[in-house]
Image (cartoon, rainbow, N blue to C red; front, top):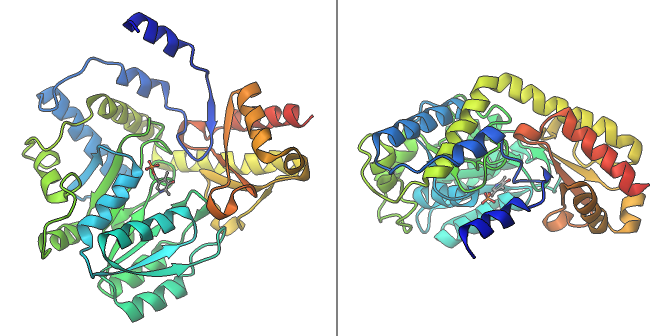
Length: 377
Ligand SMILES: *Cc1c(COP(=O)(O)O)cnc(C)c1O
């Protein structure tokens, strides 16, 4: 196919309002930035942008960690990076699991050869800080890992108590911030988090493909004192530090266009400011629940643990009778709106409606509600 034909076909792609668990719609300024001509990854003009991206990520993460960077891969690679640098075969790790992504952390840690203690909570509920504390006290692990914003269930996990207990026992704390960074305060330094990872396609309104990660000095010290090298060459933080630290020596080719997009996405987020952005996510979820209640949708999660960027909803009979997947398909085909089905244990039972980043607006809620009214008759 010629270039012109390819671009023509791309122009015919449908336009979607992405209200699932991610990706969310990218901000138009982000897409525009990504269409700019390439620079080399060692070009001073590009390195200035990389500095800006790293600074912006520090601000959103609430950290002064020097090692804060956009990893060239999706959120799951950020998870692998945090765990494979901090854990060696035989090390103990306590993982809090109350959904798919906590489970994925345990799986990654198991593959590393770590001894994994799983602390489970029912899906749709929050981790019990007391149960985490008990496991931490008895195992005395090297690492405690859990998810801040569990996208499979719509639960915001209690970070403070768990992180404080882990630190008191001398453990490093790893936090999954994929669905919190850019939508909610994360505050790594204030909460004592040693390593965190996120993804650009959720509350940052950028395309998928980058995973912002941050390591504290304590975490880097732990990597330096490893008995053997990190198994993954690509994700080894001591090698990544060569490019993303001050030296800017080649490790792998930074994904230039994706970084343009991230820089613009961070500018958009920081112009708005995190408090306003957080408030916007909370207001959008409140409106969503209010507007969907008359249609029979009920929130799965207790108010105290609801995650504003991602709402899990129990389905009314009108949706179940027709087949929930068929209703979602009609929303997509007839109204260009994507919402997520349940994941894992919750498949078929709930919908997951993401109001993330740019999409956390009353307009998105109104579009979804009127489309649902029309589909359900
Ligand atoms: C989306 C998500 C991930 C995985 O990110 P990918 O970009 O899909 O690899 C990990 N954790 C949570 C909480 C997520 O929502």
